[in-house]
Image 1 (cartoon, rainbow, N blue to C red):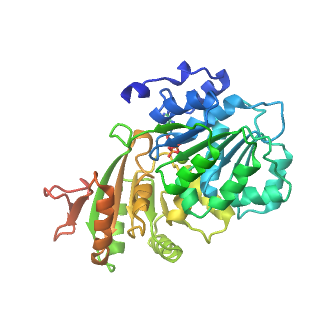
Image 2: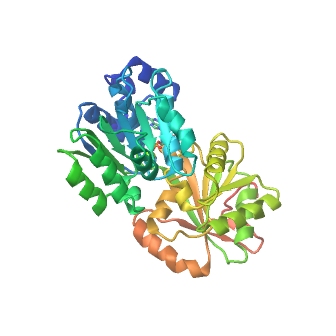
Image 3: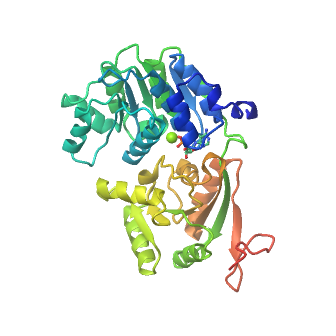
Length: 393
Ligand code: ADP
Ligand code: MG
C-alpha cells in the first residue's frame, strides 16, 4: 500500500497536458485508488472501486476520461453521474482543473434547481463531457437536448449514496440509454445491495478495486465528544469557535430549520457564518459553497444532504451540533475534514438524550473511538488526563 503511494503521476502513460495540470494542482504521487484505477480504466475495463472518502477518487476517473477524449468530435463521450448538485459542480471543477491545458475540452454541468435554459446554453456548446445529477440528466435526455447513445465512459460517483437516495430507476434509465459496450465505472465509499445489482446487471467483467480504510490512507481525524444540554449547546459551540484555532469550520445540524436558526444566531453574535440546505435556492447555494471554498468566510452551517461529497480543501474542524440520524452520516460528516492525509478535528456536541444515539454510532464505528472532553468548574475544556484542550483559552 505504501508502495502504491510512491507511484508518481509522471510514471503513467498520459498526455503532457494532463501531467502539467496535475503538477499545477500540486500533486506528485498518486493516491492508492488512483494508482490502481487509472491504468485499469485506461485499458478500457469496467471498474467497481470501493474507497473511503478523501482518497482522490475524482482524479482516479478524471484522468482516464480526459485521456480518452476525442477532441475533434462534438458528441457526449464521457458522462459522470453524481447524487447532488454540489458534488456535480465540484467534480466539474476538478475536471476543468485537470483539463486546464486542453482548451478544446468542453464540460457541461447539469443539475436541478437552476433554469433549464441556462444549462441548455452549455449543451449548445457541444460538450464532450457532461457531469450531471440523475434527474436533470434524464430531463435533458427526454427533451432531446442531450444524447448519450455514443457515450464511451459512464462514471457513477458516490454510487452507494445515489442509490440510497432513491435514484435507482433514474440511474438505470440513463445506463440503458448508453451503448451496450460503453465502459461503466462505479465509485462508492461502501458497497450495498443496489450497487452490486447494478454492477451485476450492467458491468462486463468488472475489475474490483478495494482500498481499505487503513491508517495510512485514512484521513487523520481526531474525534471528540463534548456533553452539552439542549440549553448550553450554543455556549459550548461558541467556546469552540472562540478558541480561534480553526479558520474553516463546518457545523452540521439535522434540519433546515435548525440550520437557519443556528446560522442567524451566530450572525447576530457577530460571527461570519453562512448556511446551505435544500430549501435555499440553487444559485445561492453554489455561491455560498464557492465563497466558503475560497476562504471568504470561515463558518459554514449545513444539513447532511447539502454537504454530501463536498470537498473543501482544508476544513480544519467539523462540529456535529446535532447527532446525525444515520450512522454513516457521522463518517461522512467528519470526512469533510482531514482530507487527503491532512489533519482534522471533529467535535460532537452530545446532549443526554442523544447519548443512546451516540452509543449506536460508536458500535457502528468499531475501531476509532472519539475521546470525551469535559469542562471543569472554571469552564475550561479539558482532556481526560486533565490537560487543557486549547492552550490559549
Ligand atoms: P474522494 O472523491 O475520494 O472523496 P476527492 O477526489 O474529492 O476524494 O479528493 C480529495 C482531496 O484530495 C481533493 O482536495 C483533491 O484535490 C486531493 N487529491 C486528489 N488526488 C491527490 C493526490 N494524488 N495527491 C494529493 N492530493 C490529492
Ligand atoms: Mg468523491
